[in-house]
Length: 175
Image 1 (cartoon, one colour):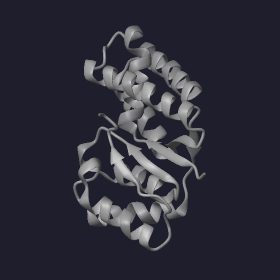
Image 2 (cartoon, helix red, strand yellow):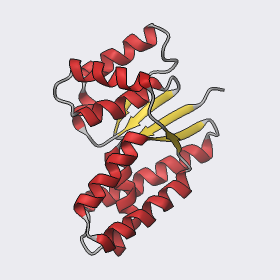
Image 3 (cartoon, rainbow, N blue to C red):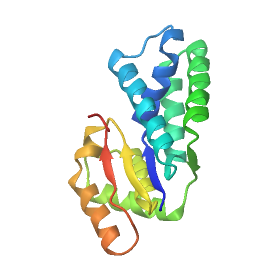
Image 4 (cartoon, rainbow, N blue to C red):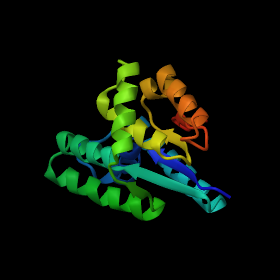
């Protein structure tokens, strides 16, 4: 059976971090982020437990953007708690780290030229998932990514060209 790779966007990763660190932070995250983060962590753990073919992936862009956003939001003490929580998330989910690739850059530029509503960093994160032939989901809370028709069209084109083996869905996974 082929791998089913689930990519995490910055927004999803931050929610998971907030779920782990919420009780220790001086500056409290939004309750909805914590609830979603707890739910998502549970869902991802269960998916990995029930299907050994499931892999979680965090791209270099998503990880870098996560660190920058946390540093901008929190003081040093809270930032350290978030870093511990990030380590907890990584220890639990054991995500694969996906480094930069030229193909990702080309796909990101293509997404950006087609969909002007998406920030370029979001185009890059989506491009990592699109460049991964076995990715099945890009988990995000970003409605622009979830609703982007241009992203869906490009994904379909890449599959038709044989550059993807599975259908990728940008989703919040919330049921």
